[in-house]
Length: 321
View 1 (cartoon, one colour):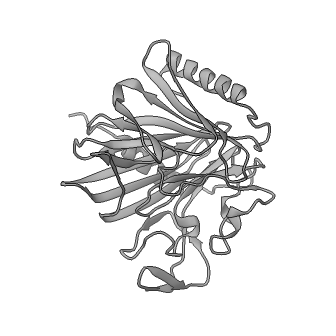
View 2: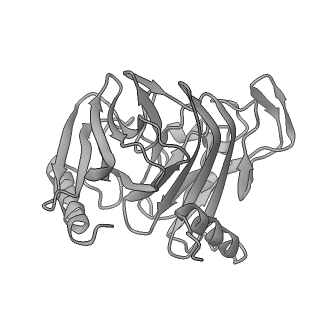
């Protein structure tokens, strides 16, 4: 009998084998981490005390955890390569944010060591450059039902794990008992980044077919919406470009997706949303940011569109990046 090995299972296999090796962050081109305090105590929804953040391979969220609880460094897992960095708010918001980088070095180990404040200000390495607010950020997951965006407010338990390999790094998040409307499901996100590229591959899977699982791009002022399908009509991108970073300066954001996986596109007050068709199969898409202050960064909408079209052509020919 053949055994089906899912992306999530492969991630765990890689996770077990890779962390047995020594990972040299000084020479690495990708890196992922999650860092928490363990020697403090909870007072309501705030984590008080604790001497220092400590990196862990796997973290189960405390029942008390919410936004700005101060128990997890920069509020969730982070992943980066030699061009760009990302983080996931590991709470009810579940939004992906962007760290703009001005260096090819791995910077996440020094981000947020002073209890969250420093990365909002420009430094030698760069800064947090995306304001997610109440929006979806870039390429994260919510549920959109009856014209309402439903977050991860009710989850029985959430477990995040990180992996670092020579050719890629990533984050896996398992959400057990995510309740929205009248549905309760388990949900898995696997986020993988490789060297030299701007994009992160995001593979998702739900335990039950439900309507409204969505991803998208947070709306910002001073931007233009960009859309295009591949020649074979199998892939497409949804993107925005403009002076939309927190600096403020030029930032492009995009999602590449398989056309057959999308039920519809919603233009809401806060976000441009891609609504997935109900399925229990794994679904993969690509999310990315392109910041003008990156080394040799994309500095105009024309350059950004040229870059997007080149990636779309790769998907048209190969069906993957």
